[in-house]
Image 1 (cartoon, rainbow, N blue to C red):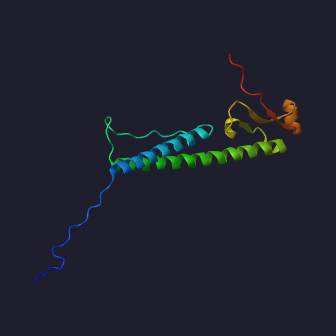
Image 2 (cartoon, rainbow, N blue to C red):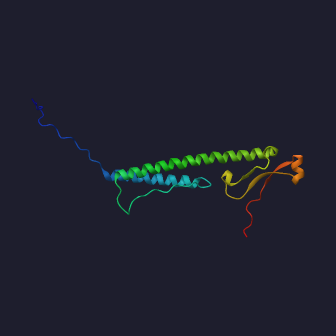
Length: 157
């Protein structure tokens, strides 16, 4: 036996309407913000980090659906996280090299033949710090070591 409720026939399920224009606008704003942050993260690091290009598989101009916009946003967020991680690792290496330069200057004899360049510490230019013996072979035999700082880039030919 089937009994009907006092309200009559079963109520039809309610349908929620999605404002696609607002959702698209919000996703496009998020994508634009992520692209700006990605560009600034790549450019802020020196030497500049490689930013992997977007893998676009579209065969021409078209209107992206909400799912495609969400995938694009998520891919950008992942690339931004990767670039930030690379920048953090690069900054740590550069800080280690700056510390090495300080140690070389304090105790050159403990860092024989070590060379550090401006690129190693994240600065432009051709400057080098190199621990070499004073007075050539005589200084090497006598244990006279010092840090020689190059004058920079050679003149253009």
